[in-house]
Length: 177
Image 1 (tube, rainbow, N blue to C red):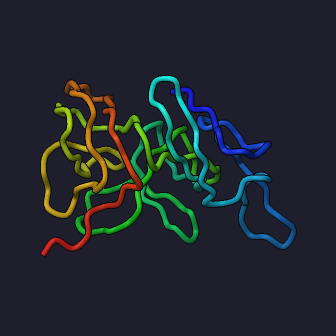
Image 2: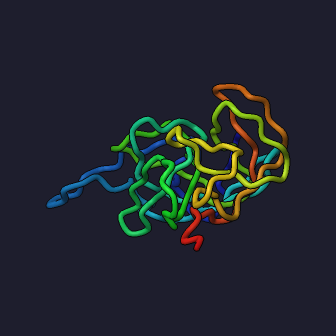
């Protein structure tokens, strides 16, 4: 993936990079380096995957490229998605190996590469949160579906695999009864 930012703004870090930011005077936590601001959304294009949207979020430990995270839309803090039913929160896909102290871009729309468990996924099917934090599976589970997310291609059962998905501002499933 070689997404290039197309949003008109100078000084933005590349999509696959992370930013340690800085702690302002009288501040208690690091903020992203200027001109980036927490939660900003940019558009970027890739020659293979086309156009996508990306949001600047604060990372979480153990994030790998393709990790599925939920995020707080006020603090912009991420958490690896876990198999808890009926969360009803926004979801994004990590574009870099990130830490709890660094800022990074997370994909929220377009064609994305998402981490999955060692299962086979068929094309054009919904995906569900797996028991492995930050990864998805194919087996339907009540309250664990990622809404506005479908697979594009079939996959193998590789333990370290990924799946190509189409996403559009994904959320976890809310109340189902």
